[in-house]
Image (cartoon, rainbow, N blue to C red; front, top):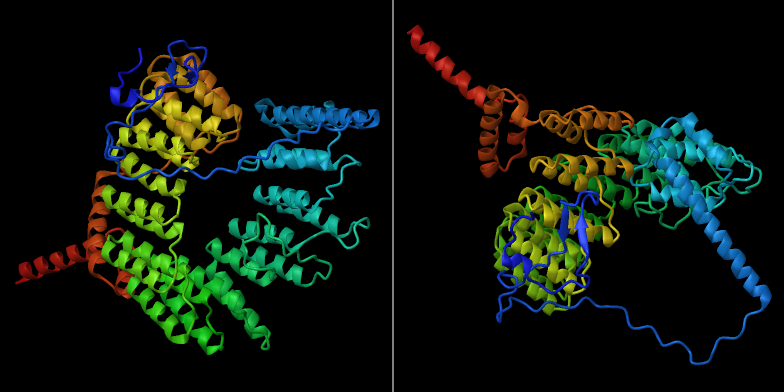
Length: 630
């Protein structure tokens, strides 16, 4: 029997296909969920006869012109033969793609030698288009078998990754898997290839290595890669932006500094900038390099070092640009120093730098985040005085602040304001509402808003689906959760690790262990490695229920794939004394943060878990000892 659904959640427009059923496991006839619509009758989002706002229709593309009335000319036999030949080639490419995909997904071919043998038996001749399609298909979760596929393709004498995007994709794949030696071997071979004069290697190729070295925690290797680029005269500095390009510009030094700062190696970036300045007295870092490093210090919450760098810019006669001021304003706002950001805003006016929306948005976001809505709306009006039009980011900051404060009426007013000014909301705008509904378990309001998004022509993004599924799973509404998952898949968003994990945990809580195993197996078949915590929980539930054979099969499935065996060190697993100590320190730090404005005072509180509390305890013990001594 289906769980009882309130009439407010059942009643909506009739589905197009009344026979359409949603099921997590088709073989189980008891696990079927009809496509139940949702009502818009009893929610604050759409009160009958008194709606809060008019929902705008998402702009659609203009209709395509009608086809010409004149019949097309008759094609020749030669042209028909070429078309048939092209169709056969496309069909063969599709067959080859499906064959290779099935081999890469086969868990029994996890060993490199067995996969290599299986690839040789296919008799497929690899080509650049086929390999690039496979790389992009598995890029979100690269498999070790993809590396075997690349090496197998390179072993064919007819295969040559001539297009630069394909070569960069291969370098990215090896670097992402930390196979830097293989990446460098391919790159050196490409540079020394006599068939390519000059070698088709761009700055983007080396930028991939620099960024991957930085992400792997190896800043020295990233620096050596940059020095290799400096000594390379044949590199093509391609100004086009790729997936790995940060948009900083085509200067290799800026790419290096940007990669180091983004991955948290700001000290290494600052050290190398200073070393380069000392070794080359006539070289002065560009304002872009300063901006990147300034952003790095602010993102790592090193306020004093960021302010020191700001003074060094003035000392070296590097004039701050609007980007410099915008970076500093955003950094101060991120550290909740809005008053300092407003001072910089006034300084920009004095020095004659034209203000823009980018410098206002962080201030409005910080004020709304702190619940200072009067000041935030006042700053919004100041933008209008200077002739600046708020962007979608400006309105989203206000919507986020109101939703975080639980003021849905205020958030709805901002939504109405932005629509009235011609700024249409996006999925990000609605996600702030969904986040509030998920936090407080407001299923009806959340599903009503979701229904209105679909009806108005707006496409939810993956985060929208995650928030809905999380809300429904926490409220144990399995039928609605499965419906949302099915609709998510129909929109082209595959079930990822988060979605499947939430479903498996919900099925375990509802004692639907057979269906949980089916979903767990589906994760592995899709190439998603389940979390070890999910595996242990499902295995424990199966053993408690006496389903030992299914537990054994589950263990065999997990043993067939490489996975981590670490469980999270949760707070509830710690001893009671340690939990009490952590809570005491959290309370002390919370009181300090409410009143303290001096970063030096905050630094003093860092250290052992009982810093402030232990100091108080030592003071009490000292007083007691002196009292007993007298």
